[in-house]
Each structure stands twice: as C-alpha cells, then as structure tokens.
Length: 458
Image 1 (cartoon, rainbow, N blue to C red):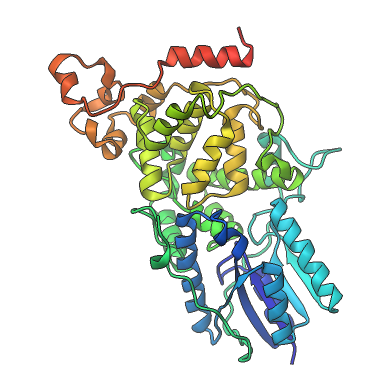
Image 2: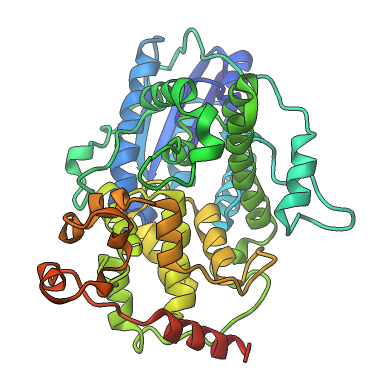
C-alpha cells in the first residue's frame, strides 16, 4: 500500500489544494502533517495574534479532515526532522508541499529534499498553492523579476490560471502515525482583544458574504476608513485558508470595477512575492535606494513609543495604531498613513515600523509587510520615493466626518465633523475639554524639513 505525506505550511485548507490532490491521486493513504516550528514558537518570533489565528486554522483543518475520514497529524520541533520521522513511521515514499518564497522557506525545502533523497524518497513542491502565479511565471526581458508593478500587472493579467480544485471526498490516514495535541487559542497569551476568528470555514463564509455585498463597491470604497469596506481576507490569504487562484476566478466572474480593483490587490501580493523570491535580502535590507541617514532609535525613542501607542497627536494616525493593537489588523489606508508618518515625518528607519507591525499583525506576511514598508520609505519599488502624505489632509479625505477617528480615539468622541482631525485648533474651554488627548509630537512643517534635509532635497 503506497503512502504519501502532505506537509501543510501556509496552505491550511482543503479546497483548491494542489499538493493534497496530487498525493491523494498517487497514493492509497495520505498523512496530512503540520509541524509547529520550535524555532519560531520558542524564540518568540511568531506573534501571539498569528499563533492564536493559527490554532483556529489547525482546528478547522482537523475538523474538515475528520469529516472525510481522516485527521491532521501535528508535531512540534524542527520541520525537516519531524517530517522525516513521520515519513519513516508511515513508510511513505513521497512528500508533497507548497512552494514559498522566503529565504527560510528555501532553506527548509532544500534541507528536506536532501534528507529525503538520502533515504531514497522524493519531495514534490507545488507552485500556485499560495500565489496566483508562481514567482517566476512572468519575467521582464533580461531580468529575474519585475521591479515595477504596472508592467508586472500587465503581464500577470494575461496569464492563464489553473482550474480550481474541489475538496477531497475521502482522506485515508495510516493508523500507526501518532499526533501531538492541537494548539488552542486559549493557551496563547497577549492576543489582541478584537482578533477575528481563523480557519477555512470562517474564511469561505467571509468571502461569500463580502462577494455578495461588498465586492461591487470595492473600487469606490476600499479607502473609506470609517466604512470598513475592504474584504478583511488578508489573514486568510496569509495562512492559506483561502486559495488566491479561487479568489481571482470568483472575482472575475462578478466583473465590474470593484472586482477589477480587488484582483489588482491580489496581483500586488504576487508582485511582492516575486520580488522577495528574487531578492530574499529585501526582507531586511534596502531593496533599491540605499538610505542610512535615519534618526537613531535612541534619539527617536520617545517619538517611536508615541507612534506605537497611538498618541502622536495626529488623530487619524493614532486611530489606526489603536485599531492595530485592538484587532491585530489595520485598514490598508491606515497602514499607508501610519508608515509614512513614521518614516517621513518622524524620520525613523522603516525596519523599526516593519518589526512592530509583524509583532501585532495577524496577516503579518513577510513579503507584503517588508516590501510595502520599503515602498513607503522610498527604498523599495515606488517610482516617487520622496512623496510625503499629510495626515490631516488624508484624514479629511478618507475619514470625512471623523467617524473612524471617533471610533478609535475616545478622547475626541465628542468632536463632531472634520474638526476632529485638528484638535489643536480648539481654543479656551473647548480645548480644555479634550485635554486628555496628547499634543502633537512634531509639527508637520518641522517633520517635512527634517525629511528634506535627510534626503538632501534642499
């Protein structure tokens, strides 16, 4: 009887899962395996919000497998060592897994391939499980990857997508392979109070509901901070509880400008992954324009603390940072504004902000997070690296009547209309009524002047 192992990583679903489908078609029995990487858990590199969401995902995946006669096998430790132990216990000939793009993922894949081949076994790595297109599917003439999004998107849009695969009807797992306990959200400390639930079932329900009610207006409303009209599917994409290929196909079936705008966002995700696949060092080093004149962390310590805690004195920035702390998630426009404020108004290294986001974001995806931060900082793929966003102007534009600010900054809840974006203009008794709200950490003109001097623009 032939046996295969399917090593789940960032693909925690049963629908549209190429590695699982290939294993089931080629083998009599399959071991669905997830290894809790001790180097990530033990070293504290996995944020509490992601660990809690992961626990939900694994529980849901196990339920789905049990409904089909199977079960999820969970182990803890080094991924390669544990996978090889399971292969030996099951006497499996093949291991199937999804491709990934980080330097860590590449090392893991090569270590596993080498270890399996030494025992006469095979590793099969499947593309387009966690991306719409594989990172190297489209490349510019004479280059390894696209460094600008627009030409990438033009080529990306012309590519044929594989068919969406249905979930398996039955999964037979060898009885002899033991499993450790499933992790529980309740055992994770430091989880954001408003963290959403994880799992494939939750993700599919969320997408179905949003496709009916929100997709059509997405093009017009995705920047509306108070309207909260985005899909909120990024955590499910990060953990792979939803297939990006399926999302693109379902969105294109709906047609219209909203669907086109949503598909474009999925293309941005692929774009960043093909950049990181070609340049893994971009996770920590400046991608294109090297910049080393940032204020030191020590000199900027008080400003950075105010930024992290949502008390910069700029209401829309503070609202977004408080949303991040409460939900482990932040509106995309808020991410852009808060990042720009840190790197171009406070003039702090993008890596400081990127680390903080990864500490809290449930969708803390290395490629998207790091390369979006670099885009804002002017060290990445933005063709206008010196652009600076004014938080007051942005607040008035994307939170016109201040509802988003009042939701997250209760000190200003009594202020009506757009005046909430400039509380420092209040006078007398009215200003005293909002005295609990902090003063601005810096004047915008001062921040802009510091930025221009640092960039050598004067």
